[in-house]
Length: 276
Ligand code: PXL
Image 1 (cartoon, rainbow, N blue to C red):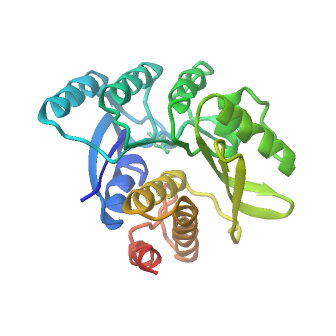
Image 2 (cartoon, rainbow, N blue to C red; image 1 turned 30 degrees about the horizontal axis):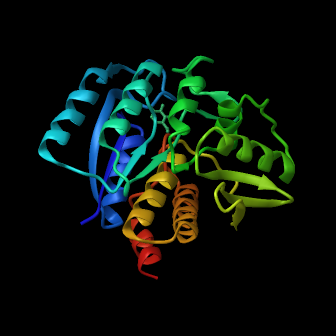
């Protein structure tokens, strides 16, 4: 069985990071090992959240795994609680990386032109070092701007997006998968392969609603599909359609929670996409 290690926080309530990565990766038929990097009472869009940093566990866990001969088909990182944690995750990848495994980095740190509340302007600089190690990096447009030091724009044209994506790839990531890429009246996911120097764009229906955690849902479904053996283009399509479906059913259901989407009810749909 294929095995992913996903490294991100546990938000006890919030439908994001590990509480979505675990069920979604499992649903793709891939084993999910985890390193919880922090425990928060909720995600940081709630007020007064608690946070216990588990930073001191990252490298001892990695060392134990190394001694046990445990290997992974992919590393998949998401929200990391501090710049110091990023440095430890870089070391973990250096220690456990083999020729055959993939490094997939979701630089979960910002959206809608702003950093998440827990981060300062120094944080993206550390995250950029982790992204430089990635086989695949999965930013939204705000994150891609922060990572490359590009001023964020609410409205942009195709050339601007491509410039940002190519700058990010020039910093080291082999492939960039940009979510929420909106230009020329289209909406979707843009893939840039810096080795082949080509683009793939997956165009999808834009649903006028925004929820927290949808980036984590996309990244988890994408990583699970890819490690299960789907092509990168198919993994983008599956993850994009699954995420859109989660948003749609949440929007259509009165009384759904504001803090996340009903990804659980859409898991049968994800499995259909994977088997189709
Ligand atoms: O990727 C979303 C996310 C994950 N973890 C925590 C968060 C957020 C978004 O706000 O606050 C703790």
